[in-house]
Amino acid sequence: MDAKTPPTATLTLAQRYHFDAQGFVLLEGVLTPDEVTRMKTALYRLRDDPEREQQRVYTRRRGSHFTLFGNLVEYDPALLQYAVHPRLVPLVEEVVGGAVRLEETEAILNRRNPDVTNAQLHTQGPHPTGFHTGARCTWGGYYENHRFHSLFVKTLAYLTDVGPDDGGTTLIPGSHRMTWPQAEMINAAREDPRLIHQVEASAGSVLLFPETLVHSSTEIRSDRERAILVSGYTPPMLREWMGNEVSPEFIARQPEALRPLLSGSDQWNWKRRY
Image (cartoon, rainbow, N blue to C red):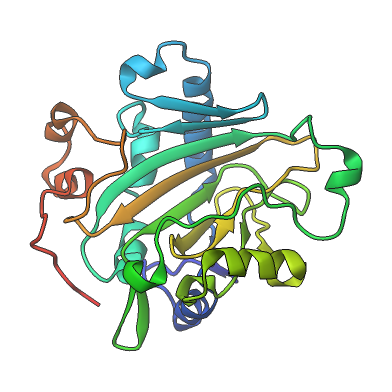
């Protein structure tokens, strides 16, 4: 579902229904062109920085075509801005069900895999590279006031336009609340590609989804590079992903209102709101 994010930073009824039923919602126009430019500039500066690991950033590669960077908020103010974005954090809190802490920050730069042939790429349907989840609905999701909530939610920002050949994220709609074994859901989607949704988005759009949703990166068929930012959020009593610990010194320099979001300092004093 493509929809403009409302100015009040709450999901519309249609957006909330789509999130509950399908397990995701694509929000258009969340990031301004200026924000996209600044975030993209920071990401490419990070990519070219040989000393990034000294600034607490980690790097993971899959061949020469796929690079993931993690623990980004201390590197550049533009990357911090995305993780604490005032139009996104309230939406995350709405679907988590209360106050949240930052669980992880990542960025991915990827291009077409040179080891995949044209014949393989142009077979029918999307080409997910590895379906997975970060939580299961039996322990990572719950219902309150007739709404689905998840204890692990992500926002994925597209910093480049993503068309049908540009590796938009692939999802299995509805899988976020299914108790089927994950392998069975993946096998069903492989059997019938119509069960898979591949995201197409313009730069500045943000995909909001729970980690109980089966999802994957996708093979790129074009010659374009895809650039995305990803932030994960959980209730404050849960821990950050390994390697995504924000330093106490950095937290101390931030405005007081942001410190609980970056540190999880509210811990078990969870402010349930929804």
